[in-house]
Image 1 (tube, protein in one colour):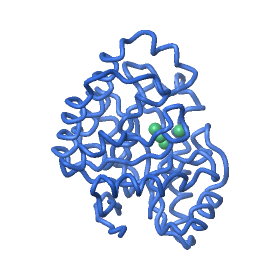
Image 2 (cartoon, rainbow, N blue to C red; image 1 turned 45 degrees about the vertical axis):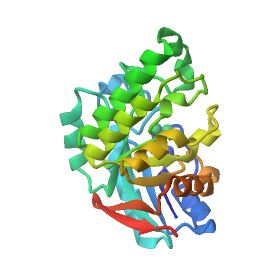
Image 3 (tube, protein in one colour; image 1 turned 90 degrees about the vertical axis):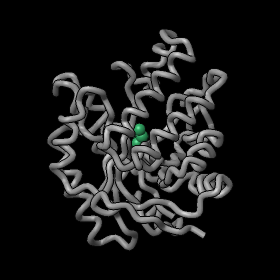
Length: 266
Ligand code: ZN
Ligand code: FE
Ligand code: FE
Ligand code: ZN
């Protein structure tokens, strides 16, 4: 099994040493992991970047070097990933930034809706400004745009909008169908992210219903714990594997220098 979503303390809201994350996954028998820490907030002027949300620009080369160094001497295969925010209008800037480093894969994340950090507990009052249906439509439109931008290899936590456990609107199936079709068209892989189990939503991202629709559309998947501390590395992966097996998956995607391969897990 693989865990493609590990953070590091460079992002300002995770803790522990990278070696501790690796030791934790090695104990669980994982064969391959990827660090995917938060890319600097490239779409904001440096003075407006919250140092508690993502790594500082000057830390990006430090991060890349640190992961590369681990690749050499770890018993587990270590890949160099990054978690990049998708913000419409900033595609060219992001593409240039991503091209400057030898990433194995890029996780694309929607964490912002019109500048609102909807998954940030400090910004929860923002939910009052939207009715549920409009909010879900806006979120999934951004996720589809992210997928179709061609900037990313993997869509991270594909239904993160459910994080705080507010009841979702009815009638989501057409939105799931449309989003799955966009993933398939983009040729992008979807992350099965177990952090939802540790959030108020108390369920994996994506939901079973959304996952089954994606499987029917032929969308590939990979796995991530989104660990922000060593104790969470690999957390929930057995549940994630059970979920994708039940949906009909027999393999997960892995990446090297942004080329995809499929790994059988049976
Ligand atoms: Zn984070
Ligand atoms: Fe994220
Ligand atoms: Fe993350
Ligand atoms: Zn994340």
